[in-house]
Length: 373
View 1 (cartoon, rainbow, N blue to C red):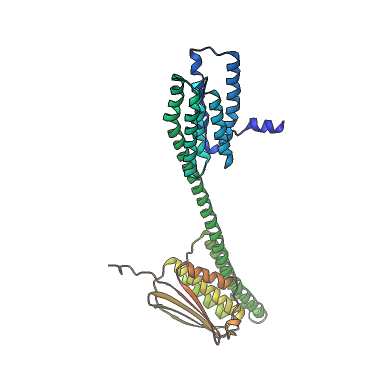
View 2: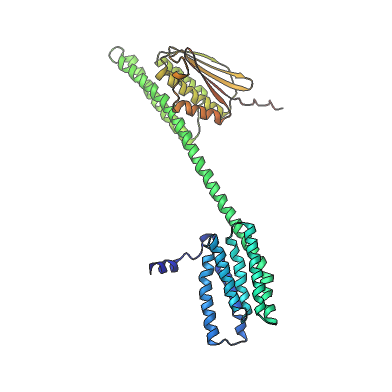
């Protein structure tokens, strides 16, 4: 009983088809035109009602059918038409509906063969009719069966193509969302790792100075407050997907971090035109590299250089820490994120460990204005 209630409640047709399939049911009126001038007997009227009662669920089911079910619906429609061909030329309507049901067949060649088979079957069963009845039965099949069937098949193919396109767009949006989450994750790792390391170092220094030099302790506390505020601003910028500060800000932050860790910084920086994306990659790489030096390297000296070489901006960050070979390099989330970001702008990352660790990043430099003239 519940099953019957669910069937009556619907939906009777897939939502993407709209209301047009109900409109096509008006074609069944072709089965009634005969009775405009011929009074049907009780038996014929009962058979007509029974036929329509069988066809309506069959017609609605054809929109849900897949695979062999489509062929079964088409065959059932043809058999209903064949049962009436000797008494009613309007039975051609069932063959036309059967041609339209071929829209459920996904392969174009198979759908066209199915339509051809329906028309051929209609020609065969028309032999049961006599004289003018045969002509009145065949003409609708020959003139409407093929156009209706082909039109339904093409409309179904177009609908499936649109659905596939929508699915692809959803997949692209999903992948873009994942990529954005990964970008934010990498940026937050680098930004917070650097900033929190700096805050921790300054807090440790402030603790040591608390009982010896109150003024120096106050300065370190002020630096901690400023670093925390800067970290908050950078996290907000990372989440919204853009930066207001670039490599210059990263260098200033690196100087403060290295000075707090008592690491001497040597700079050799050339003026290089950089695209915003490439500058962001280098800035984040510098932050991550300095964070690793402060945390893990045990270095006393750090060298940072930026130069233009063969159209590429080359950033090198080297320390004199504990790394002596590739085995000493920790390939964690920081280096992985750095490598991914460099690759995203068409650059490459190289690591060398010998008397310390050296990172070399090569990214495309921006084309100076007027260079194309």
